[in-house]
Image (tube, rainbow, N blue to C red; front, side):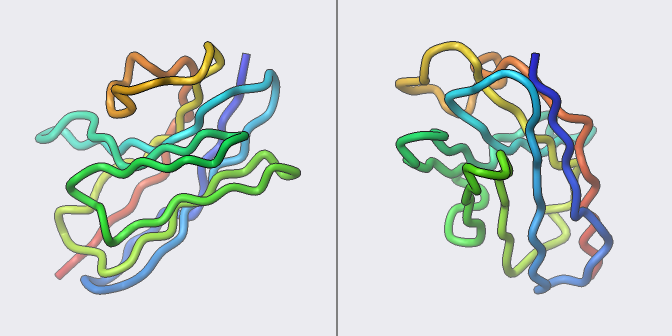
Amino acid sequence: QVTLVESGGKSVQTGASLTLSCTASGASFYNIGWFRQTPGKGRQFVATINWTVGSKYYGDSVKGRVTISKDLAKKTVFLQMTDLRPEDTANYLCAVRVRPPMNGYYNYPAQYDYWGQGTLVTVSS
């Protein structure tokens, strides 16, 4: 069992920067990542990182505008976002994989085992 709590979401203007945080507690995990969800687009992959090795992967829709990072001691992952746009408006969800590390398909929600409730980001023009 892993409990995930996201924070940092808020309403911002187009072009703003924002950093989200996700803190994990409970069992150990191999991968941790971010997805975002809207009624129109469903659940969309944003970024993921291998907890120990540190390898990172980003979704095509956000590549170049986001950076994922981690704090091992605090069991916290961060998502730094820049140049935010209205299409970035979504509920941002944190997820972890407790099964052995992924070797691909990082963007598939089924690869992850536990999910947080999300933090809402609203970008207005």
